[in-house]
Length: 141
Image 1 (cartoon, rainbow, N blue to C red):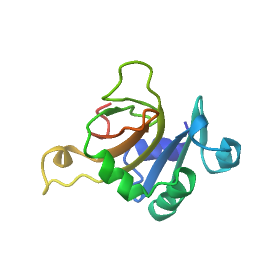
Image 2: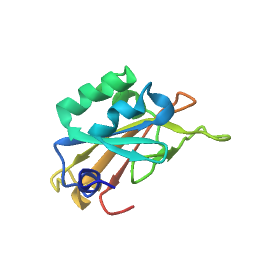
Image 3: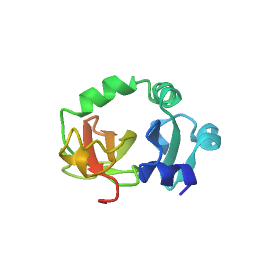
Image 4: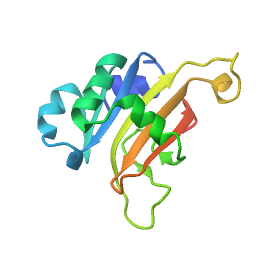
């Protein structure tokens, strides 16, 4: 795992976003390798928020904020490393096509989960086309 990916997962990059793209979700994974970390079945890119949202749109054809809003309607489970998940509609083999995530710093004034620590918000698109979301306190997974 790259230092950028580790720092993001540790909540140390709250101005950045993380993007996971499965190998079969993009036309040419090779051209993205200089921007991120190759994982077994795809690539993880950690980049500043604005560039990340633009990169997400370029790679997936989907607006990141519209995608997040869609995904929030369905709760699922996304892996702590952001490279997979469990689709809530899974009745067989379902694979994550892409993930968009950001971290929010602890905010005790808001309370709840946000009062416990930095929170990762993650949004995934399954190969069945369902969008779902997950969030957790950094270090709880």
